Image (cartoon, rainbow, N blue to C red; front, side, top):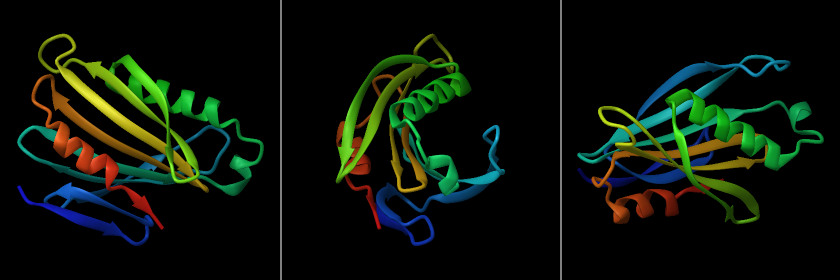
Length: 154
């Protein structure tokens, strides 16, 4: 599958992805906040599934926000959604923004047979999740680096 630069002007980002991603909308609810939409772009190649997800938060939510706590809650919510086990985590940076890289495993057929690597960033009021899911031993490090390292926001 041919990799191409994908640009979403509304989402204010660009990234390299294999093929043309499909776009989906889903509800996103946080207690105490008005409902919003979660926008997902998904594509895959023979070894991995690639996702870019974003959610916009109201500015009043961000006042006094503890970023580390926000990322902790995002990590725990993500692990819970896939019945995942945390395998590693580190702080990362994208320009002036601090984010997290999270490595987890979950089970599709056998215990811990699926590896999930996420990078998460809160940029202004937009929360981005970059995610790759692969069967253990099937991932292409070159393709994963191409995906993660090509992410730019505008």
